[in-house]
Image (cartoon, rainbow, N blue to C red; front, top):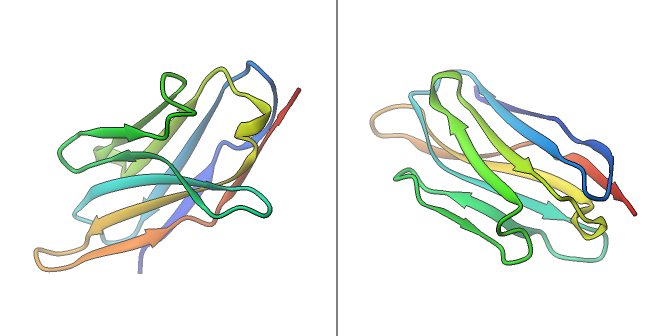
Length: 120
């Protein structure tokens, strides 16, 4: 059984930084694709950043140049570095990982979500 544990959220002033982590525990061969989403009240969950298994990244325009998605394959952990935070970045952030559990098994898992609040 695989479990994802998110950490690093919290309250920060506008202009500050946070680094979210998402650690995968269990029987895992490798992390393939990685996504970070965020959700705010009354809105649909939004894709914020993506990292393919080939290393290509993609960001929603509102965070480009401020957020960086990365992964540490040795520790089965993925990150979202968030700089120059704005109040509109406030929301619950979810990691979404595609994990290879065997040569034939690739599964998708969601983190539990973590609150990020940016004060003005």
